[in-house]
Length: 151
Image 1 (cartoon, one colour):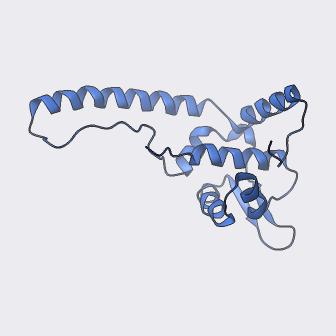
Image 2 (image 1 turned 180 degrees about the vertical axis):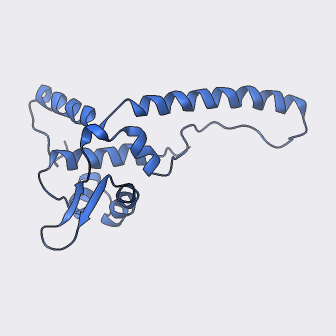
Image 3 (image 1 turned 45 degrees about the horizontal axis):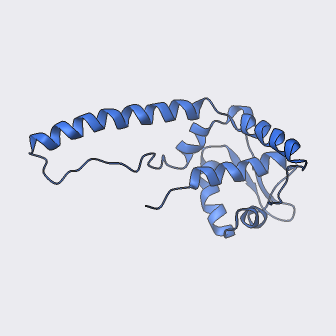
């Protein structure tokens, strides 16, 4: 099963932006993420609509954060992405009149809801600023400096 890595990718892009003084072009972000600038613009549109980033056109333009990293949580980003499915598991629905299927789906449904609530609560506790601090710590330990380059 293919995994949805949009949340991870967007956080990666946002951390590059947080580490960069001034606007960052879609082309630069796309190069850092090994993707196409159109993909970056499409993903950033949802964040722009929520007021988390802004785009400046023209020479010297690009994407910038529109809010403080300490005010932006993983939950905010997840929501701006349209709340992609968190769990790949699902209920069987081939025989909705079957009492066995109903019992199984009820139990699994409760568990899925609890797991999603826990993930959402965890996402709400992590800010972009906390992730940026972790990047700085890891970079110091690795003897490098944060930036647009990847190993």
